[in-house]
Length: 569
Image (tube, rainbow, N blue to C red; front, side, top):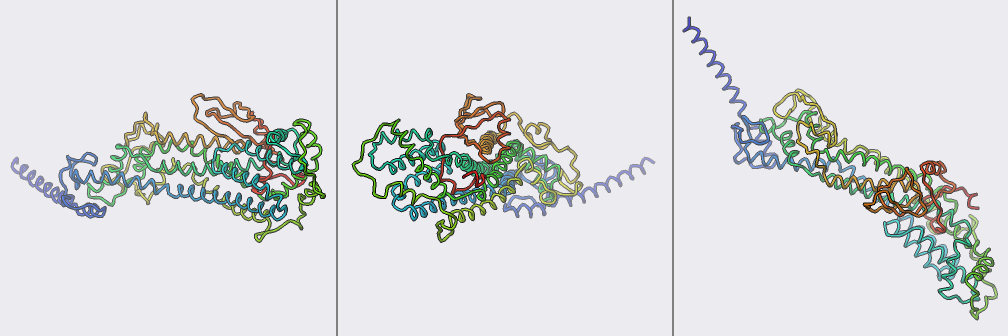
């Protein structure tokens, strides 16, 4: 009986060994792995035809394998490069959006400036002739400084506009009192009376309130597009830590070693790997979203309250009104200046027979719509309207693209691991880190601190990525500038160890203010526009002071005037 049992056991053992040997022989073929490995551009030299023992492997599962140590090292490098390219590719559309929209907005705004300057120069040369040409540098300098301000130059807008009005007053005062001679010191004394006498009436104050806000908003908005572009470019160049490289290799290429190169990773498995590798990028998301929200607020300002359609009259009319006001009040202005600065010496040259006042009355008077000079491109207002309408369409496009970029960094792992694109939809027919089958670990949340329990990537949560932290700070600074621009405040941020201190021109900072940076502000109040925002600002404890002098000339830029025509009269 024992002999029969032993014979039966021996037959069974031989049968099992035979079946095991046949299965093992089939599993040892590395044909598919060799083909996939070669398709990656690697040489097939020293690549096994059949599985070998895998004790030498450091990343992929040991046991029978189609990978040598050299193959695993090469696949390690391939994983790193592929991941870098994957992040670059996934963020390309968003980065391109910031680049192209920044370029387009910048071109449109500079075109507004150029057209405004050309239109004014052409019209005033024809209308006022030599009188304008002899004083044209006052206006040319103004446009030069405005362009420098817009492009980020170190220009204090309020001081620059004060200087413009002072120079214009000096020129006008000499023309209106041509029977006297004036020294430079005397003219400097004259300019000090600009605020007190208000020789140009209320026009400068009204234009300041609207045009200055437009410039502040436009410059800050284009700076925001540039910052968004730079941050996205830097963050897209991901720093791949060794633990991430190992996890990527295990997910992407260890199936090669098991002779299953076509097997895609499980969806949740991919999520854990990507959330571990992109943990620092996800931490950028909160500040990124605040930045996008602030950009959208300023964009609404630019297409709403600063709309070209709200411009009542073009710049030539505004300047004519201001100069006519100066001429009408010339006797009172001159008398007060003479009283304060002293009686000037006669020039020895009397007034012309016609009289300088007659010259002003004839030349510097507003046109009726029928009389207004035109150019081949139409009136200055018509041309600026065409440019601004094009710019408005661009703003609508920019707003849509900005909305699409919200939560981009926290959603990046989801985008990369999209089912069917990068991962296997069938949860039972996917690579789970060691074989084909379901992936059971839970998916961790995004962000650095949540990676403490990541089963796939060993992330040191105590060491945040320095580059990412720098970009978070850059976004925070830009967001604060955008919020202030939305309220009409021109903020120049500086890093400061003395947190909580701030300086500005007439700004009152309370609990509603950001006290993280020192700033110098130029603030423009709102007149006849956005009263709801003024109330909100007042409720937040902010106060805006109206500067003494501002810009006639920039009505032609026409980015931001919501006042009605009756307000100008």
